[in-house]
Length: 382
Image (cartoon, rainbow, N blue to C red):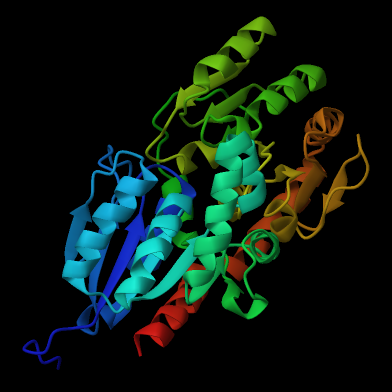
């Protein structure tokens, strides 16, 4: 029995906000697997921004919002004030701004610090910034990330990039993949979908931004001219641009944008296959979740994630590689992606890849992967 007269050591988990992305989903799964650690640690969730919450995370002992409004400097200043009051033993952060603010503040307050990097950092920054802003962020990463006690990379590609980009010593960076609750994904996949669906369709899932490659996917779909319509699930700032591209191609009746769905698995489970044309991933959640549902998948071979998951990288331009767990084509390769879409007409190929992908996802079960995360947290709490 825990003596409640003795204060419990504190862990503070920090994330920008509770949006619809993979980091929020992964954090929720990790927290849900804490088990009896709530009796050993006082856990707090800290949100940098006051934004609409797109999912429900497990309740913790404390919950705080800094209302930093997207500013790194405001995040760091307000974070310092709160951590000074809380005096945590361990601070765990996810996403780049959270990581930078945490690394700037927490070590100086005596807190052990773990950064969880979910993106291929160099390509992510280069895709969003340029000039002085890009140079400044790269310098901040190289200065601040090494202040952390440990950095957890979501894939081997992310780990290699962190060593090169952030100048981290290899023994300070550990790869731990995303965890997946396979039974819950299957259960949600069996529920009734929120929207009306065509009898057969292909699906893509992701935030509607340039990095997710939807412009490439639309072009490849137009070139392949498949019989199946395409449903693109998700929301984002580039939706209007993608819808305009679809309209200009005369595909408005064949490519639909249902928006953000509370339960995308109910739609994904009924699709013929999933396609991801992403230019930047850490560890691709939508791809993994489709595989968990037994869906055959196509992916572009961006710098980290898909090849790790599918078991092989892409071949030459215009070609399609049948990896052990899905089809993979070169990043940005419209001709290869178009060919892969056409190849998915083969029912035997779809059945083979769907079964292999489902078996592959046993490697990423929530229980095993979450235990890896908690083993690191426990190490720094002891």
